[in-house]
Length: 396
Image (cartoon, rainbow, N blue to C red; front, side):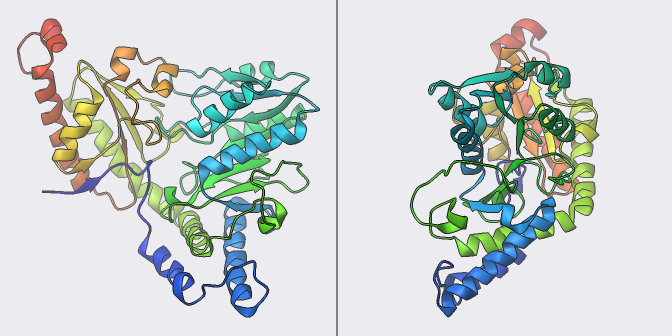
């Protein structure tokens, strides 16, 4: 049986070249990077190299890069840290309805502490309205947090314009760029970004390591108390092997972005065209203009059937996909992202996200289309709702 992985938005594998870069720091260069002796200094040298690799990739200074445990911690630190440090100025935050749970739930937690949050609506492609954004800014607005690219439908937001609007009104701008790194060019200075979150395992690096970029001079509260690591801003023993891996992974991702994106988009576009031509009664969720969405992303809703059933049957055929964000896929509720872009609730239940990676092939895409057609046909034949509306004939 084939084994095809089409859930790269949930996680990518660790590139062998990245792993090889990491291995010495588990056994040979094992010193604590905070120690003053030669073992520690050697580890710190590797951490500083990775800090420079991240800085070069997003156009910032190395001392603006802070290593974390991943995107969720970075989002929490950015939003809660700004709220804590700037609450005397105001307690109003602006975000969108389709942010990752790490942003949505952080904002909801702050609401319980007396902060006010405006959740911007999006259009049927997942884009916020810049006019609505500007109208939502108040005297007490301290932060705007809008993701660079959506993890479910792949929408790429106009972050440079969002940053311009934020700075025009003296408001800080944070972006969750977890899905964007390696897929979308980012320059934190040109894009007017004050804070940015990323996670290594989304661009062929290791899990459990991420970055918060914080512009120099920006006041932000500490997220964890303890030691004086990360320039006394983020306590915890420095995870040298993972940081080394993230540095190598982001260097590779940025250097090979154009080549990888071209290949991934070619496979994705073939897949989308074939699905749309062979299966009826479907929604292609997110931007129809492929230049406005991540090159890896294809999200479909299939009427009359459940996404979880599609996922399980495809898994039995050796194809790994997702019914939504990996961070919320255990829920039986329909995706709030799909509901926010106007997908009817009964249709949203029948949704599958296909996310392609740099090693996926046209042959794999063709096999997936064939199995998807079989799966949808089989499930619709068993669906009472489908039979009621369409009759008993074969219909895909």
